[in-house]
Length: 182
Image (tube, one colour):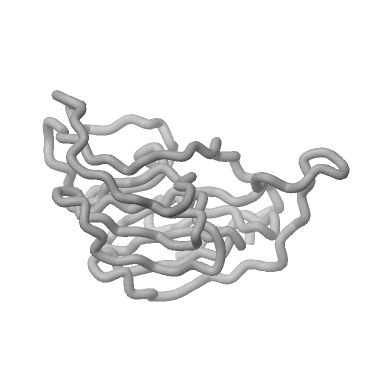
C-alpha cells in the first residue's frame, strides 16, 4: 500500500453511449480514462471524419463513467452497479458484470483484461472477451466524506479510475488509500 492520498475527482455527467467512425481502426492498445497512464487525452488515431449516431443503448440509469473503446468493445459503467461491454459495430450488449456498488469511474483495459473500480472502491479484474471475473482486490471500510457539515455526500473524494502502467494497476479505494496491484 502507498501513503494515504486522495485521488483526482471525476466530474459526473449523464450521457448516451454512441459510437463514431474513426479514421483508423482502434487496435489492442491499453484503454483507460483519457487514453494513457498520464491521462493526456492524446490518441494515435487521426480523429473523426464525421460524427454520426450509429446506435444507442438505453441505460435505465445514470452513466457517470467515461466509456473506453478496446478493439470491438465499448466498455462503460453505470450507477446500477454494472459494467457493460457493448459491441462497437452493432450496439448490442455482449456481456455485463455486476459490481458491489455503483460504477462511476472509467474502466481500464490491458492485455485482454478489464479493470473496474466499484462504488465501494474495490477493484475487479475481468476477461475482456467474456466478462468472467478473474480476481478482486477488496479495500477497507470507506472513509466518510461530507461536502459541508450537515449536507449529504453526493460524490466521492477518493475513488479513481484505474490506470495500467507497465503491468501495474493503480487505483484509489474508498478507504482513502492508493493501491498498486501487479
